[in-house]
Amino acid sequence: MATRNLTMVVDRRHARGEGKGLSISPENITKYSYVNMYLHHDGYPEWQAVQLANWLKVNNRQDGSAMAAKLVHDHYYDSCYLYADVNNIDHQYTYIIWTGDSDKTMIACHDRYSEQCIFVMTPEQIIEKYKDDMEYTDFASGKTRCEYSGLRSVISYTD
Image (cartoon, rainbow, N blue to C red; front, top):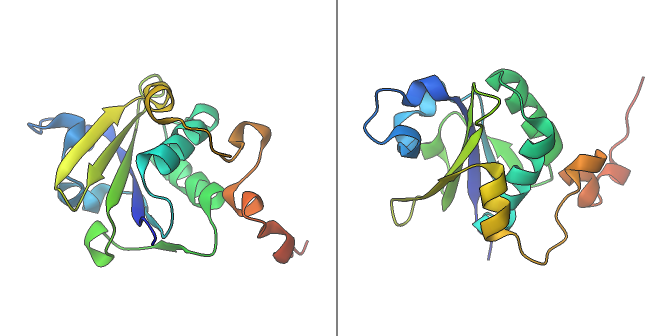
């Protein structure tokens, strides 16, 4: 069974003035997200949160639109789709990458089934808490999820 998940990229300014701050519900900020990227597999924090944290350590950008484009490129695999908002697809976990402050990029994780914010953490905090003995994508070496899954060999590029 797949643990479906969705990742959003949102500028921090959209959480300012909200009572819950960066733990705001994804449904309340979907209109501000640069991307709503659905992944069909491995959405639990021990995998997807760590993948996002590892990726952010080498791809931290203040510009949310640039970050969203790079996120889709680096995390794409056969069961990856983009949706207009978080309510267009059933999924358990929603991850929000909060941009706009390069020193304090944060990730929030929401469990849609329990309607709880599981965490709001820095990439370093996520890795410390959730990293397990798994073969995560080595984003620091320029790898992408597409390469990791073996799909790169099927994709041909033309000049």
